[in-house]
Length: 306
Length: 306
Image (cartoon, rainbow over the protein chains, first blue to last red):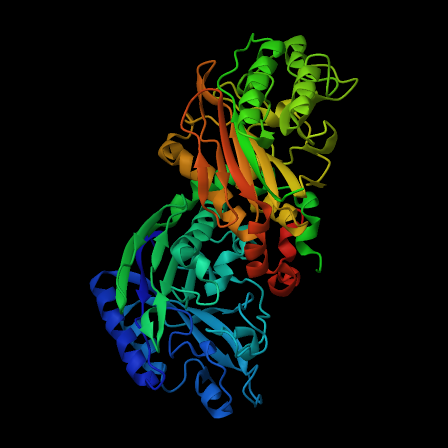
């Protein structure tokens, strides 16, 4: 199997609060059709790709919160996505909310998770988001809440990599992209490609000074991470005006050089295909040659408790 | 003392192999005069600021190699720099080669070091470069050698910070800027300003594919580090055609937002003053709030030996 192939960020436009999963899955299958036409071997869907981004709200109805979680993956409503992908010989990364059996109430029902599915339809890796941003308890004085630590449990699977797609592939989710530790954990395991889905508002109404910098703050840490770890990044956004909140879009492919080689411009469902070559990681992995040049003995604070 | 003040990168143009220290120090004092005129409280000189960048050569004469090292700091030839700075009430960062007493031969004579001198003329912090790039043994088949691990001992002082300039200040040297661990070690200790001197060729004749990206590879990791750690960076270059090797220049000031707010354009001695406010770090330190959001338990590999 060649280490050079076409991959795509499969950006999703807004998903309404009352939009049923089967409608979202139909949109995703339409993107798979475009991916097949573009000869893609793999597509990256966003974080929490099956529903609206509900952590923007302080929801008190446990039944509604539970409705955003998946009890099984694939489940009855996502099975068609798996079948469509396998039929087209396309693997995928999917972000979704993973329910933990037996949880009730409106908080901590499960994980903010992602899976890696190979072109044969097998789940080859699972990740649970480590860096949950926002408030751990609701603060109704904020203009825009971001309640991931309230709804989700901290990820407990570390930063796994999988040998698939004739290379080594890792996963991250959204806010993880701002933390160099997350990228380094994958780089140290030899990751050559990292898939990342995200839901990021284009404006922070409670922190407006950062608004003009949002695109830079999205891209720059990933560019540095790609370069410093010698890996490809494919990042897929939720985009457009979703339930009154504008999501930033700007799905992208970043090369191991740190260059942004593809960038979405639209606010809707959009396929961003790009032909990558996993062998292009070697130049930067050699340049930084961790075994020769890193100095773990000097990094003690990095793993000490706060 | 105010936490808002003017600081400057004091870039140096080329230094010839046979240029005496007193000539270089005179150039540095001329930059201090310009810094005083610009009301600077602090200036950042380059790495290895007192001599040419000799690790580009495989030198076999121990006497010549030793001539690039300082036996004391200040010493007879650098004392005038200390006096000139103190007389003007300007503190400084200085990169230099630090001899270790008793070493002979042409290799491992000492450290690639920097000091932080406060406006009262006191040395308040010392750093010895941790990430030495290039070859540990000479390889005369290369078009351009970079023999820091051959000439220098690995830094053994960790990543110190000092409480000075009404804030907390750290130091790094050159290649350290490409390693997120170095920045995080300073960020975890609350650094608000990091001074960095460097000697980077604008072209890599043995790795020419990176040549068009050299400026990006210089700035981007620092921009990400400033943002991810909420700190100011002042980076001072050796610039211009030095002994047949063009040094990249592009001295800069980077804000805690990650924005490059000042950038040198010349190839010679150049003062790049900029008014910084250490309080501007708070917004980003709050945003990333390490105690709340970092997950050291998930970062185990970062400090494991290779």
